[in-house]
Length: 485
Ligand SMILES: Cc1ncc(COP(=O)(O)O)c(C=O)c1O
Image (cartoon, rainbow, N blue to C red; front, side, top):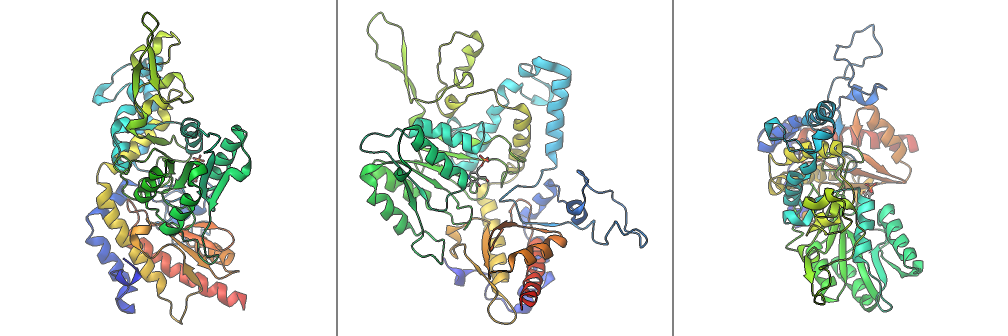
C-alpha cells in the first residue's frame, strides 16, 4: 500500500480540514472510549511548575496566572517517548503501598482479598498479558530489569563469538544505548570496534532501509557474523522492519537475531513465537504507559529456554543442561528458591533469565497498563492506529500555498510504519516551531537538528487531537518561515 491508498488523501480540502470531520471520526470509532482510561494533562498542567494538576478554577479577568484555555486538554502526541498515565495506575500503586504498610514482609506470601496475588507471584498474570501483546507463549516472556540491561543480559547468553563468527550487525542510526551496548559487548570479548557492522541507508537524503538492502548487508557478512541486533520500529524514522523476513534470512545463514522492541510493543501486532525470533527486549514506558523508567520485558524463544537433565556418569550428581546465561536467584526454581542451597536450577523459559526479585511498585504500574490493553486487542488497536496515522499524514500533506516546508520521512507504506510519523523540517525552523506549539499545549518529540516525531497513540489519542495538532503546527511553520525571511 502507498500514500495513494490513504483513505483520506482524496477528500476535498474543506471536508478533510474541518473540525466536524475529525469529530465524526471519533464519534463513530468504538475504541474512542479508551481515552477515558487515561489522565490527559491540561494545557495549564503542562505549563505549571506544580507537580500535580493545577487547581480547577475558572480564569478570572483579574488573575493573570490562569489563562483562558488552561483547563483545555493538551494535545499529547508523545507516547513514543513517554506514554500517558492510566487512571487506574494510582489505585494499583496505592494497593501496593497499603499492602506494604499493613503486611510488611507477609506481602510477599499472603493471598489478599479480591484475588490479588502475593508479591511472590505478582508477575504470573503480567507475563501472560505481556506475552499476548508480543505474540509469544507465556513461558517465553518475563518482566524484569530495564531495556538496556536486558539487551546486555540477552547478549551475554546469545552473543557467543568464535574465531570465525564474531561480528555484530546493527543499523547505522541505532538508538545510542543499543550502539553502546553492542560495542561494549565486543570490547568485553576483546574484539575491536571494527567488528561492529552498521547498516546505513543507501541514500543520504532518506533514512529508509529497504529489505533488499538489509538482507544484502547481512548476506555480505554472513560467514563472519555471530549476531544481528535490530529495532522492530526505528526510533528516528518510525520504519517498521519486516521482523519475520529478516529473522528467517539470518537463520538461513546460521546467524542469531535479537530485536529491540522499544517502539514496537503496544504499537503494532507482533508474532515473536511464530516468526521464530531468538530473543527480544522492550521497555514498558512508551506505548505501554507503565511510567518513566519502569521495569522492562524480554522474550526468549522456547527452543532456547529448555532445561534438561544432562547425561551423567553413573553414580555422579544430577546435572542440568541449559543455555548459558548470567544468573541470579530469581531465575532459579521457585519451589526451592528459599532453601538457600546454592544449586541453580533455572526455571524453564524466559523466567530462568531473571536475576533479582522484581520491584512490586513497578509491577503494579505495569499491571495497571496491561489491564487497559486487556480492554481491547492489538489487532483492533492497529486498525484504529492505521486510520489515525493515515489521517495525520493526509492532513500534513495539505499545505495552502504549494509545497510544505517539511517532508514526512517515515515510509508511506502503512505496513512499514507504526503510529509515528517523523517530519523533517526545512533547516532553521525547528526551534521557532517547537516554541510556538509548546506555548499552545501541543507536545511532540524533537530530534535535533530538524526532525519532529509525532505519534498518535491509538489507546488515547483522538482524531480531534490530530486536527488540533495540524492546525497549530502549520501556523507555527508559517510563523517560522516569516521570521526567517
Ligand atoms: C530504541 C531504544 N532502545 C533503547 C532505549 C533505552 O532504554 P532504557 O533507558 O530503558 O534502557 C530506548 C529509550 O528510549 C529506545 O528508544
